Image (cartoon, rainbow, N blue to C red; front, top):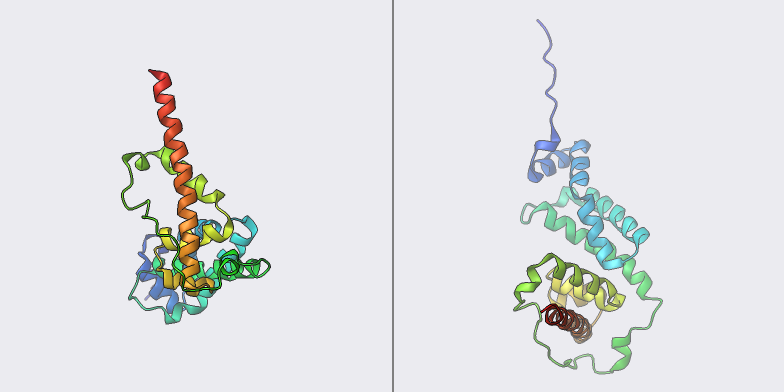
Length: 210
């Protein structure tokens, strides 16, 4: 009678939820597969916030280390990817705060009234023109966001890209809600001006081509 060999699990073919259960049971190769699947996306998220390659790489490593340590407490109430992105956001913000502490907050110094409402501005993304769907327009948006000052870009990424509420962004960045609104307002104005210039140039080019 021959001994049966244990079946080898092909982790690459397993869905995230199964890999999480395997990893929670102590199977490290399952977590390695999760890292392989998400390392590029996590790095891009960290880089969007930090805009520094080395800091983004360190934040990514911190995120996966935190995820590994906290995986035993992960509940299937949300997807693994959603949970991991939140962990990565927190890791990036920890690095961001260390850099921010070296600078004076413009929002907090401009006004002593933390509850002051900034000038209201309609959300430019609420009714995007058809041009926003083009590859050229997405590239313009990407470049415009990357050119934002760090304190504006971080708020914009968390609020308008990651979808956090103003209150959550404030808690993450240790800012008042008024300061979050002010930074978001300034970021949107800057982006709107950049987009307006883009569309104006595009119309000019079309007129010249006629």
